[in-house]
Length: 527
Image (cartoon, rainbow, N blue to C red; front, side):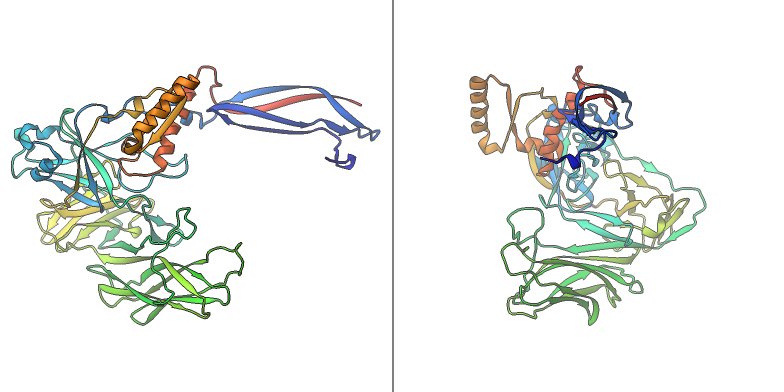
């Protein structure tokens, strides 16, 4: 309800645009009254005309069908393996046998590895993700004779479930814990023809203006124990109600002790009577001290107060503890650690075990960086893994015990150094059946269920088909994980799977071709 004082001199017109079932829609809402500016009389709209002009949108092409017609898993024999940390992995004869592959029956030149790397899928639809599994280049040592002998092996780059990204505002790396899995997955096939092999990029001949002998490294401690609302994505770890001082060890070989260690701590405290304090220190050096505001005493309040503190200290050795102390100023005070995140500088030196390295200082417009790995030998190799599904070997020059290579570094690159005959051992999961969710046609109803409930899901699908006359398909959730999140049980993959059918509706000939709508109108009014 509204009074005449709220009526304006012209009818109020609201226009908007959106999408319904992937088809662009124009929306018009009109308040069909006006106050005559001359007489002051209230007049009612009796008719109007409108015109819609469609102009091409630069985003229109992104709304088209960009999905593969069929999954790579639709044909051939496939075997699943897991990786728990980022680095170079080694597949041996015993690995193949454990998967159920007879090494003597395959041509090693046909070995292929597929997977999209670790990390969770983006929650936002606009975030980048790969469609279906991507083939990764590998190195197969001993494949030239067409036989997989005892000493032959496969090397591939695997990215673990947790990820690190650079925060440009703080110039430190921040971690994202995978909430769904502690393992990333890759897939092996041996009967689809010659596989993709890793290539080598030459060291740049350009004159370097950055000389890199150290790199940025990082580690975190985060244990998922408590979810107080039984909902959402935030979990907490160690409790500080009784044990109010706890220590957490970190260790980095070849630590540069002249550069401060950066520490981020996330903590939650709870009290209805007093503010409390969480203090972070190491070796007697205070890193941060943060007050935790008390919360109100009724049921409408939150579980507690979250705080995050950034600080730094000077380490005196490669191993150190981060001490977290919770000062309770009220009897009811409780605290929980969320995570500890540590950023350090390490010397770029070969320590006998593989290591991933990135250098923040190397990156910049026009930069050409020379990297020098000390204590190296002829077995040390470097792989540029900036593109996680298309890594390349990096050539370099060994001068005594120094391995040097030069690369343009307008943006930051990520590398792995490793011994050429070594690699982490993957987890052997086993053979999987062929599947092709990408090849499914549109249905009225999609029922997603775990393997144990597929029979029940099919019964429900048949019921709707017989009773309601609708088409229905049942889908094993593990197949969705395989095709849409590289085997990891990521819930966003279910959304992405269903969204594939929504996006494919763009091909409907009855829809507008896509673009921005400009709505024009003419109104006729009467008293």
